[in-house]
Length: 428
Image 1 (cartoon, rainbow, N blue to C red):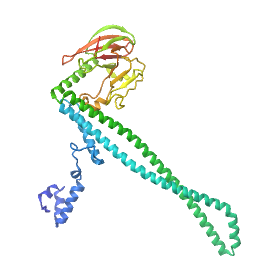
Image 2: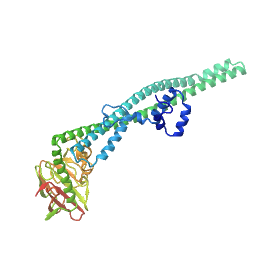
Image 3: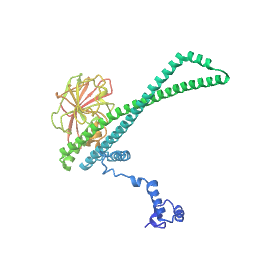
Image 4: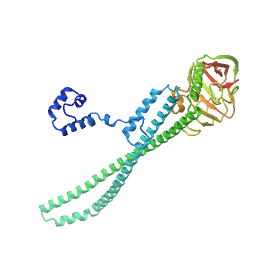
């Protein structure tokens, strides 16, 4: 039994002085339990309500507090894991944390949708009630106005004829005042109902807009979740849950990242070929696995004075298939929004595998543990021919990285500008 003099209570209390006062005050076991309840549940509620986010299942939770707490936990964990996908276990941990974070977002949005649905139902009921009252009051007021104007003269004549003295006249005046006040109260109530109706209607419209926005967010999160699960399954399929196979895959990605950065920095070995015109053939895409590439694609880069730019700011519109998300045409991938005038380096129809910048793959697949920014766009098409997007001077180059892989590329230095374009994973 815990007594006022016990070590447990003495050590847990904020100060010895406060404990001494408490010891002189508490004499009965019931008082002790009451104080302990206050100490545990009021002063330190986190001891009671803490949730283990590692074992927490966000798919089945409808507790807003737990979802918020674990969402923050997952976000912090992802930040801590950034750049740490050096083992298969770490890569899977990143993917699992991304999946749990997205599931928490989905549950949070669904809870908010359910709450808004209840609020809209309540508002609809209130609006119907106000509308009913407003209709009745309007009818009553119109009736009173008609009666007042139709029968005012007759009523005044009757009252005057029946008035026999000052007392009767005062009663008539008092009665007339009451009628007027009654009509005024109807008018005030009518105006208040109208204002209430407008307020509730605006509140309902606002909540309906919130619902539409949440539905879009929910659908986007569900698509992201599907992509994350798919990315995890693909990683397991590619590696067959083997650390050795994962290390080979990781080595390839790191080698490509190193080579691309060094090529942009001007460390590739290049040979000048000569002047080329817009749309002139300059290379062809390697139609198989190649150095630092697990599949055929063109990595296209625009560089301005050594700093990469978004290629979509220079390329013109084109027919395309956006396959940068969970699946081709899913709509959850990277933006395909060209706004420039340049020709494309390959013939449409363009297949976009990854966009520029902080891409869908960075946020939803294991490569997010390797790099946070994609410095070009990965594209392909039915034609393997690579063409210059604008006129300039053509250079053929290669870069041999730390893994011994010889990455071939071509570069076009665009005259009278500080722009260069790079075309990687090609033959020339």
